[in-house]
Length: 292
Image (tube, rainbow, N blue to C red; front, side, top):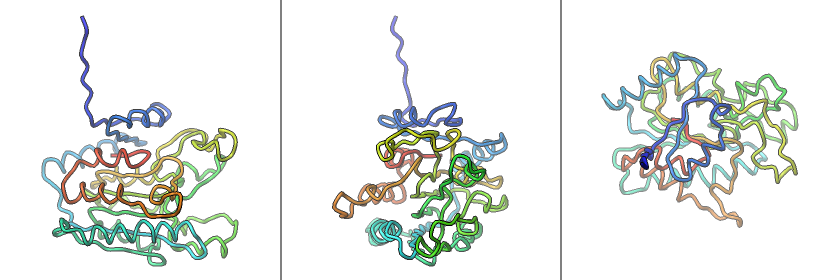
């Protein structure tokens, strides 16, 4: 006798991408809203579970505040495009939308998007939504910092490619999991990081056509440390962290001629914030992976 199996539209994968590969998650995401959590300790799983249950049972006390943080480095075309072609028009679109209601919209742009400013924001004045656009720091597989710092937010403190040239980038220029103390509460917050490796890193290059071979870019696939940290905070972590596995591209918000196309981002944020649409329904199709 045939047996009917029902699968929920909202799926949460629990485990490392070595146990449940990213590619399996990508394939599921064609038809389902898929998220993933993976923590190093049971305490972090428990802390995240408590945050979700508390939000469902008691609601969220955070003010209706949206903060866009767009980094732009001197002499750098990529961050200029992400700030001017994504962050600023996206913030303007939400700020001017007739359904905005009580939501406030703030933009931290260019040189203001420093490590200290973002750290202060997360530790002392967390918004309901923090949207960042920047480079994600990248390390070679043999670098001992890769697991802990890959995908960290490269802040405006970095003086840009011409001034810094090809020297190694020290941790004072980027915001990583190591910079987030255990004391703050981000309960109820959502974080969207537009940056390479912001959500994680596969073991092999997902874009072999660029180099001509499917080279190993990490010793093993892993979820980035920064989202693990902010989701698993002991006093209450963020409810969702949305980001990219592997590299992020300007084609996400511009066409082949450089024309702006941000409607996918805009409609996603409007539905989430102004209409109360579940985060998984919109963002799992927008990004490579959603951690929630």
